[in-house]
Length: 380
Figure (tube, rainbow, N blue to C red):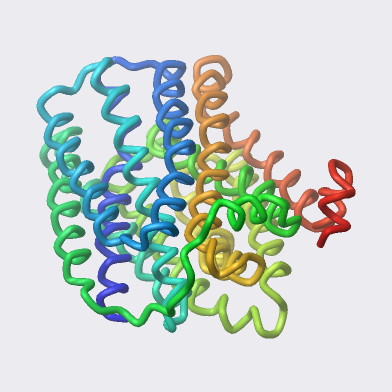
């Protein structure tokens, strides 16, 4: 369990130290909102297509360790290249490749975690701690050494992640059969899973879009880079206790009910971002982030585990992440245009409305699927 906790911490340190800071770097080299939206959405779109392939490859080969190491090596190489060649054309290329690698790693790590005997929530919370630490360190680095310095932090963290991955020689993974394409086809007919994908497209898509534009939003409402790093650290750390408590709450309230609660907390959170755009107020929303993101990520993969076949866990999780990436692709593109035409705050009004729709869709569950296919419903 210690090694997996270390892996979650250092990978999400890499993610937190890089993902939130690309928009500021793009802005500093003259990229406008529409173009940055195109870059972010292109990266997400290609990553979305790439994620399920990684899941299928992992399920069929069971070589997660080798796949993860290769993806982290790619992140490290891209950090070096982008540090020396930061321009519009290279921004597009690097961010697309970065997205493919990062969004390929996340579900594969979750796939390993849910296949062990360890409590998933207790492993995943170390990811939130790592994300908070990475964002804080990169924010401090940028304030001292400039906008590109977060790429050096990313490089060091990526190398450290590879070291941890290579040390995962023996972990307590339950044996499972290799999946075939019939198993994967049946996964795509599972009504509970399909409804959850709809929910994920919006909830996780909004989170991905928010991560792309949060640094611009925070600067626009009067915050600075150092305070931004502190706020992200505080917001992300708030997820930890909720992730830790989510598993206990599942026994009493059920994982689906708690995921609905997470969706409602998202609605409230984005409403605050739109109606009260002040740095101190945003810093004060840490419990909303903890309750929404902490519960969602603490339960999502575990919930998937209860509704799909063991043989297709990696595929199910990577497809789930791809659904969020699809939502992020669409919302990043739309957000870039909204940024130029209406201002950064309007993006959060869109998030507020969309999360309301997500909860309305998720609560009825299978009834949504019957609107499209009675055959799928009857077979299950």
